[in-house]
Length: 188
View 1 (cartoon, helix red, strand yellow):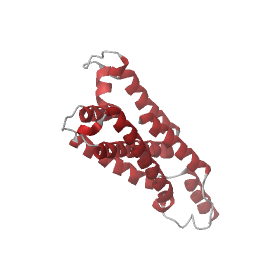
View 2: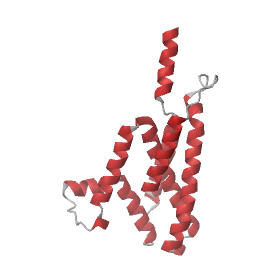
View 3: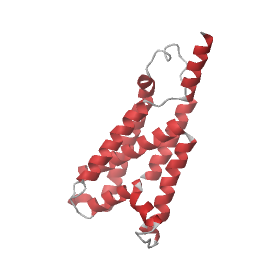
View 4: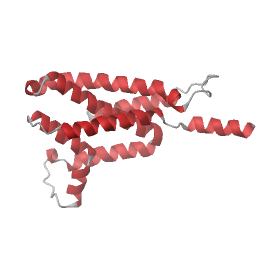
């Protein structure tokens, strides 16, 4: 899920950089209005990916004990959270955002128990593993697939984070917007 979200976010932010509107009315639009189309497109793509991943993984993991629709809903929320957060980081912070994303993914991949390393929980690596955001996603999915019912708090947190990044995507300040406003102020 994370790698799909990373590639999707990269493509969307790269396409948005290439396509900057130069119409007469773009100066009159508010910041949220300028970012609304790309935010809507990003959310739509994330929801579509969540549905596809949920349908495929629901059949692979046999999620009949929790319900296929619930599983797809969880996948949609996770993809929405990941794609919106990664897109925000790439659009707002650009290379620094990519560094943050790759650091999170790298820390998760190298410190996960799936690699076969037994990391001491009291060491610095154990602390990094515990506080990794991707570790929380793994915990959520493991709880759901193991039939545990104590995943609601994590789901509420993920819904809140997804909503936060949807709103933040509406208020991305583009360099070209700032530069064009500075040029307009210099002309006056």
